[in-house]
Image 1 (tube, rainbow, N blue to C red):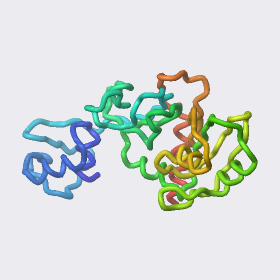
Image 2 (cartoon, rainbow, N blue to C red):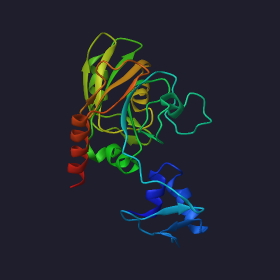
Image 3 (cartoon, rainbow, N blue to C red):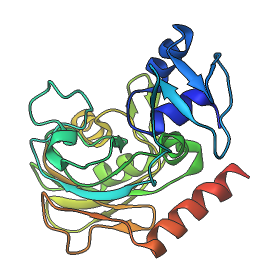
Image 4 (tube, rainbow, N blue to C red):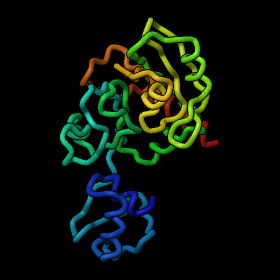
Length: 233
């Protein structure tokens, strides 16, 4: 494992900070000053300023039912940030985002390597949302939403949409543009009143209450990571 990754996964700093420490000569492997790009093997002793740091922690994968008002940022100075809200003992990061005004399923982990794979739109990982808008739906609206809408200098990918009420619908996306559903609706003359994500790939909120979080089960994690490995091959 690369040294900067090993250091960051112990939770003491980011990879960028680890590289800075290494460049300044603060890091040693088995008593020998480390170099940028150094590798760490099983049994190696890594020290920072002559203080030993532990092996990387066990990977953490949790599901949070994010309430409205919580911001998906790791910036601790921002009031209502998701990291302080969860209060996990490990240094974790959200996988993707849900905007402050939206609620529902979001994953957090300390395994930075998996985040980009799970978010890459070409992997077609489904995210399903329940949406309420400000006026009755029309066939034209549903057709245009499903076919693709031009926002943020691109056209959204075709998606699945199903009307569930006079002003309600479920939508399945495989991409994650900034405030995508809200922007799509606004372009078509609608305003989102309520937005909740209840599924990510094989994971569902189920009975998890707003504001609560839980660890993924072994079965859930095995299937999720299995899908991620399949997409890489």
